[in-house]
Length: 129
Image (tube, rainbow, N blue to C red; front, side):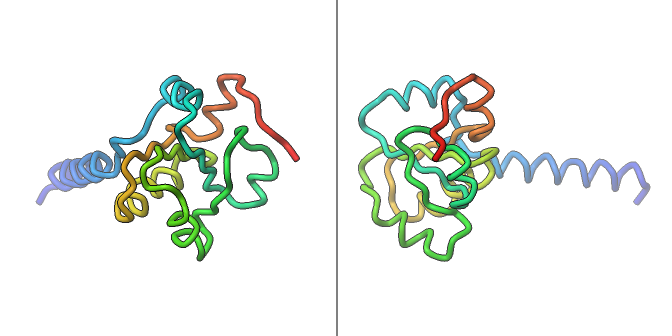
């Protein structure tokens, strides 16, 4: 194979894998804010305890995605309530919605695209301890 054919093959694989990794439940800040105003949701911050203590969205509970108890803690949530996830940039919360939540049978699960960084960029408030 020529270098150009190999290059096109690698680029095609990369684009294909990126499209598979996208989460249909990612929502942008405006939609997230609409859902946030609803009384029927559970807001989950999947960052570490240290990150959470630096500032979080009001009403959020902290369930660390990297914790060995993540699945156990998530299973304590109501399967029927919509779950709104966020993390720092949207990566961990995206993984949580794709992998963990759908396997556990939750009905509605959303991920804040861009994470808390997107929340802050819109001048939304954080709770600090």
